[in-house]
Image 1 (cartoon, helix red, strand yellow):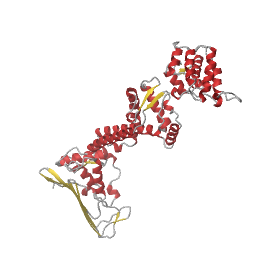
Image 2 (cartoon, one colour):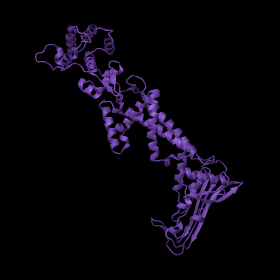
Image 3 (tube, rainbow, N blue to C red):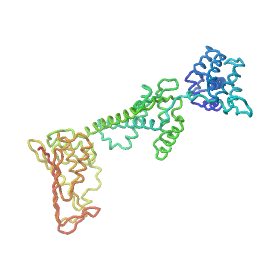
Length: 493
């Protein structure tokens, strides 16, 4: 019979049955597909175990009875002596033990049915003795089942840390390989799920725990007390994804998380913990402190790698060719590249592989196209090193529906020229603040902005031209004039 049938016929929960198997009291056969196949003899043995455990016979005594190393009468005598000192609710156990003792039966010849019925029989009218005040004797001891962790918060934070750690490993790996993880999106999250499905079973197989569980004082073993085999760890992980996280499917995932938390609240084992001993030490504040400290260290290490990878390849004083190399690399890594790149002379070149993809030119979209000339970088070179990069342009008496200036190139010059300076901050959050300050500058009227190692200026002059109508710059009069100069200069002093 199957585990489900065994549970139904014996009235013994499956968790208890697994425990008795782990203790060697039951040894069911295995079918060809590896599933347990219980016999009628197994059922009879389980009922004996059920009876004697409810009478208070210990696991060690049951094992000795099974092996013929103990006599049932002696075991019952020991239990009768113990019962005499227990509360009135255990009086029924004393009664049944006494009846069973008088029969003189052995463990092999024991018929548990009648005695189990006596244990569960309702109180009889006029029944004498304090032991009949309770409807039944105690149920199976709670220790007769594999342990599990019922703290939803403890389990949640352990898994969250493991997810976080794997995600950080992927982020660091992508950075070191030259890929910006912020551009990975959904692929990064999917890779995290798959990688954790490989590493978590491996960690359980080798150490019986994962980093998150270890930090919170928890570990897992099989019913036999040994580390989980890798295949069982994989099965457990997949079941957790489905029963616990709903495979991250919106709404369904939330429902499954709530159901998992509810099982913890009712102190029920999770479906993916069937046959697993989930052991937790008593919670101590130091566990939470250790988890928080570990998270900070991992985040700091990942941020350090990410920050280092965002820096340009050439540092210090740059030649024009080195600046061009910096610009092209930053354009690729930070995601502001397009169809063009800078050659060694610092001039714009179109990428050959992209030339066939040009469908509409900017000239077809605008009456005036400032980009071709205005975005050209003009270099100030001293002692062979670039000290400033300038873009400028002038437009006059133009009738147009949209004219824009290449101000978006200024931050791109900064990340290529200034981020390699000694004064540049190593940490990415400081450089991001630098970019936000530049973005919030007054590009319409012009400005001078001093940042570590660099001075950025925007000089803008306009008359009779442009007002912003929400869809682009619009002409106000026929006579109009616009002049702009953007300069990114190194500040050595």
